[in-house]
Length: 456
Length: 137
Image (cartoon, rainbow over all chains, first blue to last red; front, side, top):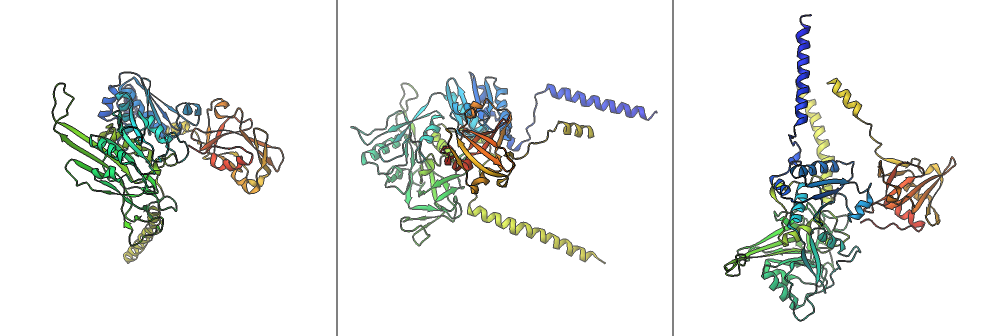
């Protein structure tokens, strides 16, 4: 009897401690984020951005309501609301509520729509980097005009066929960029309008006129921003636009036996994105069908930085005369081949500073150019393949000097498609058929041998 | 600890089957399967295509659906009609495509749930009855 009492007392005390701890925990908001990369804790930059939102901002994430992505999204978005109650959010299942998805023009799972003061920006994912960047774009306000060249056989921005660019135009529109067509082939003078935040040459089929080249070169030299998306399979030659910036087209067709989709070796999957340039950020992989190679020469002058954005595998090559043969031959150029690049040229001019009234001093002039050696990746049929859409938005944002948040908010997207390229298939075969069974057999032999030696 | 485990077990609800079967039987269970368009045009499916729709597997089940009009099921654009060997008839209404065009809303006659079927496997069968499904976005 005397032993029981202390035991009973201990049990009651333990229960009281547990209850008290639970009551205290229920009253506290403290949390510990044990997830990979602390993906559910906002960075200081995101918290600062959220605090700066002065009016109601709503985030709608279109996700399968029962899936883990929706759960993660609710958790992440509630973090923004905790920082600033003006930021509200909802998760809409587009399968259960198709009318809502259609009303927002959403055609893809994981689209996140942010609305603020009558403006809208779409984010491709419910990840902190995407949401915070979208908030930043909304706070900046207004849209920027990007001017798309016409008159050389470019696909139309309103064309909804698989070869059209309506999806690209729509993606730009949802991200506060207003695409507008620009025809420099006619008129008394070829001049890029001053309200063009960037000039886009998207898939020309014919060569540019000399007066256009002069106008565009004058534009880029004067702190212009140029996106050139072209194919070696057309008669357009964008090299006069690119040469001043350490870039030019190699010509020919890129083939990659190790990293391609299906049996078409010219439908290249790009997994090597070596640059830290914001254009390549969070892109993951790209699919560039029927593209050509680029040559990058970054050593032209001080202040010019040329980045390789994407390149093919070491087993790839450029077939210089694809009409005749696509087999690797003596005149083929072996890989890896650069297929996307960016140039950033900053230089100081003696005069022209206008930010300080009444003063005129040196100013920094900054030119940015992005070029890809393929153009099909941008069309409606391919824009949603792998990271293609992200590349387009990153490129235009970087050109328009709207760089996404970097560093602290850059957390890897944990759900990424994995194309089964021939290289990857070979690796899987070696591991599953060779290494793993071999290791098991080896271990068994080792154990058997050890036992035999241990017998008296 | 045992009490905690018991509580967790009580709170755990058995999961749904991994795949919902709108029609459970395979091709051998039927004497005929056809597609009937909303305009009345009927096309009998070739026997070698029956495996696409028998068993009829759903990609997803909506547990709390909106009104049927949201899914085009108030006026289905087509109907799959199954004639079992044992007699009778099974109807599955086919509504509108999902928001991205990759799935199609469906509902067995008098069923409470709405299901989503893969549009790609149904597209050629519906075309036999003159029903054109747009390609996915």
